[in-house]
Image (cartoon, rainbow, N blue to C red; front, side):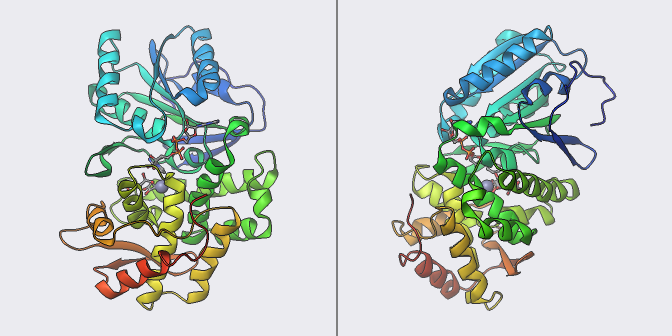
Length: 376
Ligand SMILES: NC(=O)c1ccc[n+]([C@@H]2O[C@H](COP(=O)([O-])OP(=O)(O)OC[C@H]3O[C@@H](n4cnc5c(N)ncnc54)[C@H](O)[C@@H]3O)[C@@H](O)[C@H]2O)c1
Ligand SMILES: O=C(O)C(=O)C[C@@H](O)[C@H](O)[C@H](O)COP(=O)(O)O
Ligand SMILES: [Zn+2]
């Protein structure tokens, strides 16, 4: 990582891989690498706010201890679990904490947890004093391969998912694969949805690896999961390095999210994000098929690969008008025009703008017809 301000801390020898995001920062992937965190902060930092959720207290304490051992003044903020953290109330509470502790522009935020923690904590850092440093320590598969990389931060509002936020790149990301040992299997599978997304939009080898052994893809101690993690991070790193602010190319990372976010909102966030994205990708594939863009065999490949790792591919409980309203608030929409990321083949994303009502209805009928698994 380039660092004209200097660093504190010294990384030790380990099995870590550093994946560059352009020339902005590195994503470090390895085992027992939490001691890398202090080294990512700028020289001169005095105060650090460690933001974490209850489930990762052990890891957050470890990171806080490592920071304190480097002479930093460590403040802690425990935020509510899962999507409840991504709210205006929690954001305001963290702003108060930073204000009362006197955080200045040379101080920093360190986020330890899943994607909800990195989204919230990233937005706290983006908005405090118009932007202070942030380092992400993702502890879910989903956050490692997606949420912690790329600088999208934000919270939800009652009207929809991630409607308030900003682009704010971290100084670094540390993915300690050891932390995945405590992650429940359903959350591991949810993370695989975003990995599989990377396979469909850019790296077909990801699909081949999952298809060859779904069990190996879910084995946190194995080499296959690590390869999947690194491949998906590279997909995301390459895209955001080329188009950080989503002027065009970055939209491909939103594959499956138009319908997926709608399901999350209609279900009041009782669905895991990865599960909703899984169904959302099947919806997008059915839509592309209805529009004549995508071969049915690729649609069925979506169902097969997602089902093989225990992900849902159908959603039968929703009311179509509510889903349509939620989809209209998607950030890819322009005016009254719905816009989808669609595939013309594996690794070949395009945009489908203003799809016909009958194509949308056909896609919804296909995902709500009870084919594939329901939510585990
Ligand atoms: N900013 C982005 O680019 C981006 C990308 C993808 C997803 N996201 C966002 O990320 C969020 C989903 O993230 P998520 O799937 O990590 O959910 P999450 O943050 O809710 O974490 C899932 C659950 O796992 C627990 N947990 C976390 N690490 C653990 C560990 N090591 N051991 C045991 N339990 C652990 C959490 O407390 C939580 O209950 C959504 O809000 C989504 O919108 C953002
Ligand atoms: O990084 C991106 O860009 C993505 O779209 C990645 C998605 O997996 C992620 O869920 C993201 O938060 C969705 O962004 P949004 O702009 O639709 O809120
Ligand atoms: Zn996502």
